[in-house]
Image (cartoon, rainbow, N blue to C red; front, side):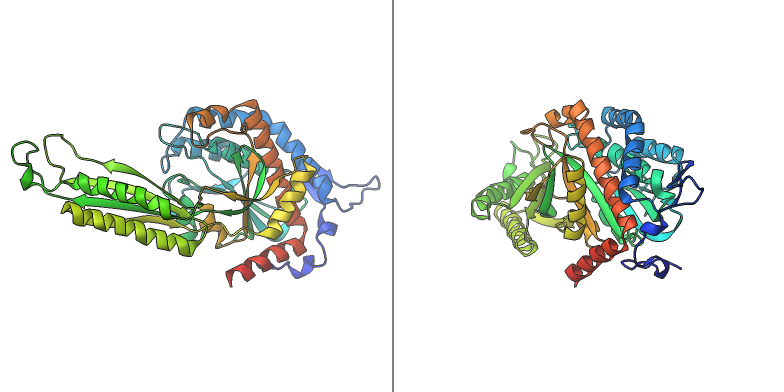
Length: 429
């Protein structure tokens, strides 16, 4: 009987715990001295998963260090993806790659003893230009591999499936958006992810994002002989930045607008014929984000008018804020508490993530795990250097266990899966 999202198979309704018997990595769970089998509690399964994660922790740390030493930018994570895929296959996972036409994306699957829910884990592994792993995606990749190994250790005693998604281009390019468009997540019942940070936090909201690119086209001329014959495209870029700097005084405090010049001319003695700039706009409220998007666009249009240039405006991407699933977060909270790490709660994240797009198509939860000292500036060389510290790797293992334990809770409780999906459907309506 196929498993329907949010609904337990009839044979399993009324509780799955009585079905939690079977082989676990070569040995039987829950056998009695008389040779009969008994139910295995979720607590016992979690303990077994934690032991499995601890057993492979040296390999996880080695993988984290290897990824850190060889950072690859968004969409170019060929070696990182290959390392993860090789490890997953060595642990007995079936791996499909490429995924959704993305050469560095993959999904690794392992199945339990009978049909049940499919739980997705989400790994990221791209790095920042120049900075390297200043967002600590090396810890995300290795940590979620560890979580997958921990769940696989006990999955022979459980109904359902575990899927580990390798999702490239989180920093630039929004790989999860492409995976959502290709329906890569449509067959899973919930997705989970942790992200490194300076403390362990359950989040209330994160920032929606709009990224725009403005290209100005002028007319070239000699900068000294007859500059009056030209129209300087760089002036369009500079005037846009000046207008946006003025606009910042009059936006809500939680909103963010930041930009870079991507092309500013090729020679000082030629009036710039083409120049380009890129802006990211962020806000918690998506209606307000649309308003700011229009105001920044008006800044660029005014700059084109003032400089006598022609403007081409392109929206490169738009990311919604994450739709946090409170039923899932209740389970994450309980597992973090059981692991001895009470999370700070109801906090706001002033970053943005393509996980938000994923959360609009499947119940999902992501949370911060403390890996770095308080006050570490994120997306910095300092953060990158600390992403392979002993503290960072201890946090990574904590995150792996919290994710694995939450997946086990979902696999052992049809009531929980139903509650998670009911909340998702209500939020989507």
